Image: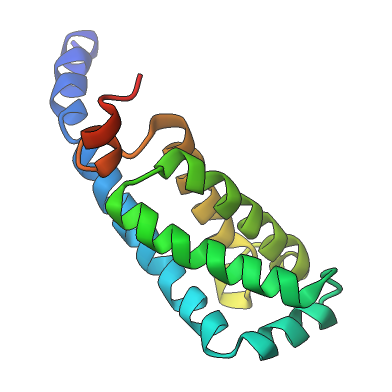
Length: 145
């Protein structure tokens, strides 16, 4: 019985892949928006904070992180160069986990690495599957395979 239902269910649910990728991109872009804007609002304070975390070249890295996050907001929203921007954003999340969140454990409520890990998983999906049909990537470069 389930063997006969599964293929039909899969076909129906697969029709939502592109919409799911769009919604996930927009939510993730929104998630990066606040941190990016806070960094740019006081980049000097961010550079000092990065220095206290032991991040080398803290001013350069503050600018790089803020720029990557803001570029990520724009490109994820548009679905443009989605696979490419996912990679540096994953690096930003790895640095955030290692330098800020890891000592607090997993739970987001304790400032743990839960949320940056989820962001990394979404970004890995975008790097692997692309932006979907509702994107400039699809319009400019055609269907990803």
